[in-house]
Image (tube, rainbow, N blue to C red):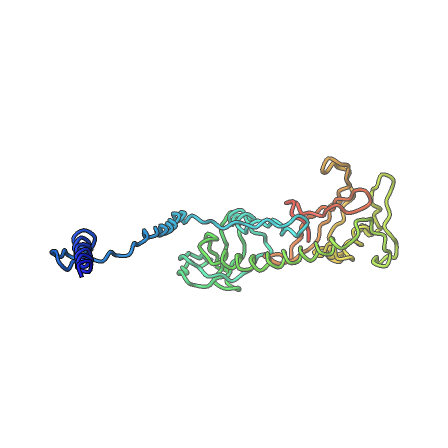
Length: 299
């Protein structure tokens, strides 16, 4: 009995000691309880740094709007249109107009006086007249085709330049196309002397004198040039419209001895059918080039 009491006292002492010193304050049963600690928030990992947004590209400043059209360069070996001067250059600012351009109906832009044997009258701006001739930039006009009255007015004070510019634009386009076709034929023709007798009306081949001088026919023509024309390499020259075949002249062209033959022929121009001079350059048994006085190639 005594031992049982001692054991109970020991257990009670142990419980009191545990409650005082070992039990968490909020679980004590004998001594004053303490506050339960607030639950600890779960540890959070540090937020990942988001990548900085990519910098927006800065638009380059717009270039100054100073665009100018450029003329494309043609590949080597391709057709190059002939350099045809403008109509003002050809007419020397309307001071040189050939007689073939007249007579021609024109419209006056200014009033002009016309004189006749019995007096004078005036034609107002907008009136029609007939241009008969030109000299030094001035037109001689008549009120009608049959009138004997005459007046003088500046070329530029009529619609004459407008008419010629329109004709010239169409003529220039046709001339360039003519030159292109002739170029194609020359490009596809073997670069050797022309000897095909079948293309020559006289049935003879191309012949040369010692030194390479082309043989001239009795009618003045040259089989070399006739063959080139027949082959289509030169399309503007019609042998039937040749006014004069010149004799070959020995000259130096491109630093080389060359036979130059002047050929005058009739051709269609903006002023009508006219005679023009051209020059065929012959070297080493072939036609090297055929050009006008200006140096422009004959198509």
